Amino acid sequence: MTKNSTSAKLMTNWRWWMVVLLFVATTVNYMDRQVLSLTWKDFIAPEFHWTDNDYGTITSIFSIFYAICMLFAGKFIDWMGTKKGYLWAIGVWSAGACLHAICGVLTEKMLGYESVAAMMEATGDAAVAIASTSVWLFLIARGILALGEAGNFPAAIKITAEYFPKKDRAFATSIFNAGASVGALVAPITIPVLAQYFKNIGVGGGWEMAFIIIGALGFIWMGFFVFMYDKPEKSKHVNEAELAYIHQDDEEEAKEVAAKAANEEKTIPFWKCFTYRQTWSFIVGKFFTDGVWWFYLFWAPAYFSDQFGYKSSSGTGMLLILTLYAIVTLLSLVGGKLPTIFVDKKGMNPYQGRMLAMLIFAFFPLAALFAQPLGLGLNNAWWPAILIGLAGAGHQAWSANLFSTIGDMFPKSTIAT
Image (tube, rainbow, N blue to C red; front, top):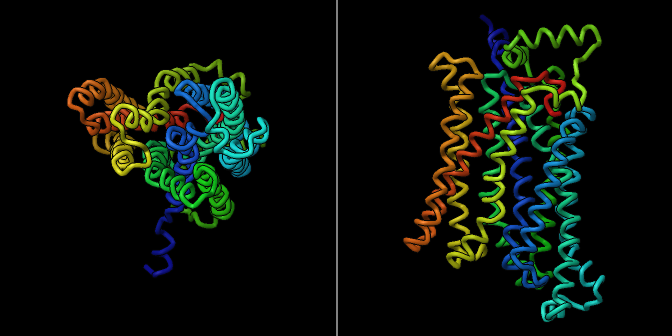
């Protein structure tokens, strides 16, 4: 056998570079989302007289609007195409992230204050007006952020289905989904530091530059995506061996190829999706579980600050959040790999392996029930950090497997929807 014939049979692994792109995008996605939760208590609230209720209003409305946008984001990705749709999504959310930085200036101008110091000295009705106005401005910025961020997971799931056979999709999904944990992991050791640094050198309140710098990362990612992504059939980086591996699930693929040959790409109308039980199984699964992750994501920094006195900008505060999300990241990767192990070692089909893995990880969030009693009873913040980390890891591992079931249940042309 010649060297050329040997190299021709070697499989390229470009699909894993796609996972790297998706991982980075998801990391940036969650860092953009985390800037507010890591700066509001120590940097933003003193300027705008925010209470926990004000912050809770912002996070609640953001979550609701994000959920509504998710209903239509997938259809938008399918309609625009993966590449254009994903670029639009990350462009919008990066712009929304950066727009948070001007909320302070707009509040000053709209209410006639000359400086941040003047706003901080306000009391009574004036303080209430500052809080109310700034909350509305932040809600607008958060709305733009939610609109774009809603496109991340539909696009990422679609790319995963394009580049991976069914048995590998849960692991690939767990890797890019781990970007959420890594984003939450990196955020507490970078964002408060950035905010404090720029505050110390007199650039606003510091938090503004944190929003701008983290938001700008999305625009940088767009440049890499433009040049690296294409469908596997068109990519010059994917050889025949890798393409054959990607399309090993040939029963479904054969139908898709036949449909394309007849110029009848199978799609499902948006509203018809709601007539399928598969759609409702996914909706119900996300509805009853996503609150776990979002609650920890938005409130963990404030919890450690209020209950144990560790500010997000302090060394111990950063280390607590870092530990929490390190646990989430590592165990969520195991959760994505588990179905592949069940398929390869136990002879299960991909669906059975996924369901068993999801059952195992469904019990992990129960660990959070002991976080508060142990934390306050022993006056030790590390117990909540570890137990909440286990709960978050269970959710993320479970969620990664749930996301990958979409590729099992629907044709690729409708996966994002």
